[in-house]
Length: 401
Image (cartoon, rainbow, N blue to C red; front, side, top):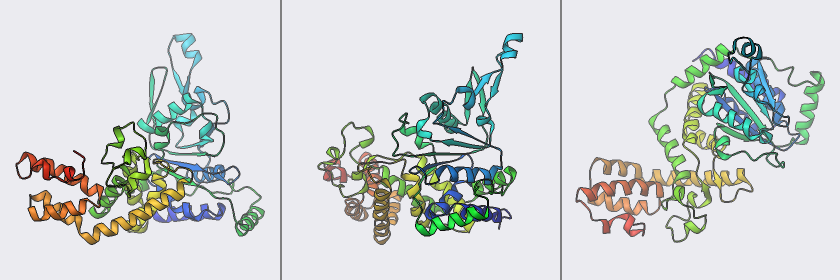
């Protein structure tokens, strides 16, 4: 057992004491802080504590050594990236860049991210994507950090941020307003602590301790079954046998005549990126490191916060409800796959063509588009080897040739 786990548990306790309510998101927040370059997006209506939660996390990890910029103000280039050192330019003709505190800080916060101007968004987007920023032809490499942003998605925003920008956030959590009992609990804590939640939050660990935790999490090994489960889960949200990724035809028009209309694909307008897989693997490692184990149920619970901001839903009015329903569908589907032993059958077919197993696989594939996709690839191989004809393939039977 790592000697640093008690620090994480203490951080969680200190956070829970001060941030009342919203119990469903605290575990995922903690887990997501345990990997390098952690990024979190907090979404909530005004007055529900999203800025407070951001500040509590940053203070608990970095003390007073963090920087928050506000999208509601006119953020200038020098505040986000850097500015020229004028004396060096005037006296020596040298373009020396003074890098902004936001770039240099280990703890970074963005208040009202949906109000950032496009230029600022582009710079922060580049920082999260490549771990670097540029100014006046010079580059600054950003090492490990934690970046937390918040927004009210119901506000009439100043600027519409592009989906790829949101995709760079590991998870997105949604906050609810407090119940009556929670309001009393918060008022009681405030009275005891001078009505200052954030100032009362101690720094629980040093950056060196956090870095060591993140190294240990990175080195944690997952069982092949968990890795496979994550890959299949994300693929279920991505797949479209009719080529949705490269089609301009909107849903549900594209789905007309498709054999798989009762699956997740028919409710996903834009699939999540491969970053969803990477983040879910990181969260699984963090869960195993912290609690000693991670199982398929844990993966499904964590997936909600990884997918909700990355998935373009056909019915986006209630994203959390829609994602919950899709994950419930996944639970049933994973159970069916296990009952049919279909991955065992597929592994056998990977080893070599078997006419009897192939017939069974085609029956299964008619009820599982991810399984069907793998069978399509095998069929192409067998056609080249002369073992089957194109007319007898599953693709031909489904009318996809």
